[in-house]
View 1 (cartoon, rainbow, N blue to C red):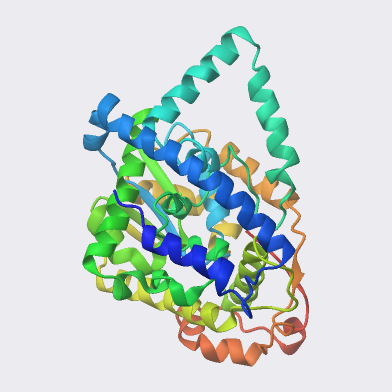
View 2: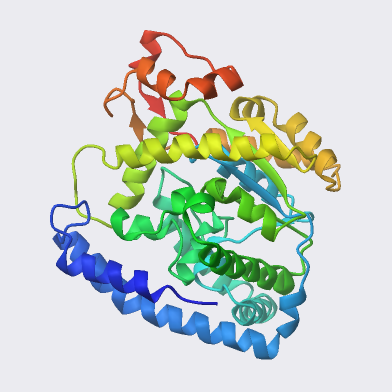
Length: 395
């Protein structure tokens, strides 16, 4: 495993010395974030990498741990992948995922084993006092974020795990200097074979550590950022099951613009309007067309292209269908799991409303940009009245 120190130092230098006239200019808010980040992050990385080293000594068997029938949910951002991911993760007898806690606090086998030991002690001798305190802290902090539901203890997009080697798309949310970044948005086509291998070898080792430490059988991940790396993903996980989720561009595009601006805005200075429009237009078109072209060229019963509307309107039928198609064990209690997930989604209230007209688009422009996607999926093009209405952000 190799840490991308070159990118780390470039983002450091840009942040303090060449950030003028960028969205990450050195405002008071940005300076406070950087001071906190560079105080805490290096310490955390030193601990994680020490524990990775301990893994090789104490738990070397993780390197040979099989990853059987992993399920990867891909597609554009804001296309229902969080809903499906969280729903499947409720089937804990079948699936496991990396949670926010796993990604940022316990990525190694050593840390997971230590956490499991502390949890047993807390349950046996302290009546889960520590457990309840952590959940209360979680609700008061991450639970306040409304545009995307986040919790230490809920499954999360494990593209975040690449922050541990400072080499992945999510680095751009902390440091939006796109001219410094490798072209993660066109991963398969833009990165060198050596670079792709370095990133995916690390990712696979993280999954092996997790599966080894938890003893679970099947892994499920939702990673829109894996859409441009579908070929490399299939190479490293030849037994993978892949679901591509497609949502109407009239909903996906403004939701993605809103979400990326919101997410990056948490770490940068206050800024009016919407940014990164050209980047997002290029990215979303590629994340539609490239993975769909790959799946068309590699037909397999291990692959499924799924419309967002079908998932939302008929979740039980859709899920039972791909359980059977992909060879996962069916569960008598699946309807209850699905019903609970749907009720949770219906009660989720986002604090973001937006319209694509405020972002500088018309309905006709979006339809033209994504004309082939509208044709392929027979998405509704709606009428002019619908284009000026605010659309509520969905997961």
